[in-house]
Amino acid sequence: MRGLVSGALIGLALLIVGVVGFADAQAPRGAVHDRTASSPDLLALSHDGGDGRQQITLVDPRQRTMAVYQIDRASGAIQLKSVRNVQWDLLIEDYNAGTPAPRDIRALKEQQR
Image (cartoon, rainbow, N blue to C red; front, side, top):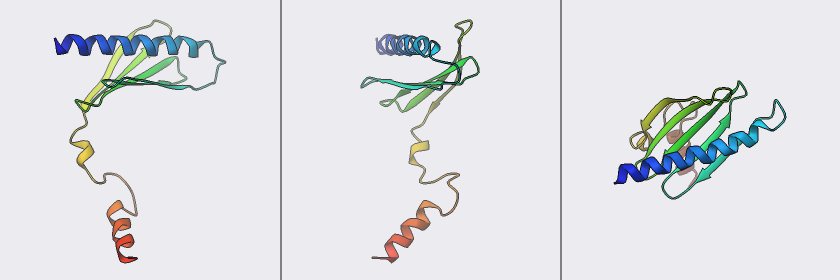
């Protein structure tokens, strides 16, 4: 039952984003639009890549999972590009953060106290 509900929510989010995407297609060329649609169970982010494709990112905050789709505007084809559980990613304090690292900044702030 939960799978059916999740599937319906994803379908609804794709429909919403598709409608937003159609409205964006009517915008002048060169315009880049980002859109967001959300519910307590699902967050949908839409980005117009400008190359005839739209990228949709769906985030399930409860399961801490995200899925990325590309939609070809000309054909309407939807392609799943990636799915990832981000639960463990969100536990990392810093990764590829550059310098100064967050822990270095924290140490400096603690020295100033």
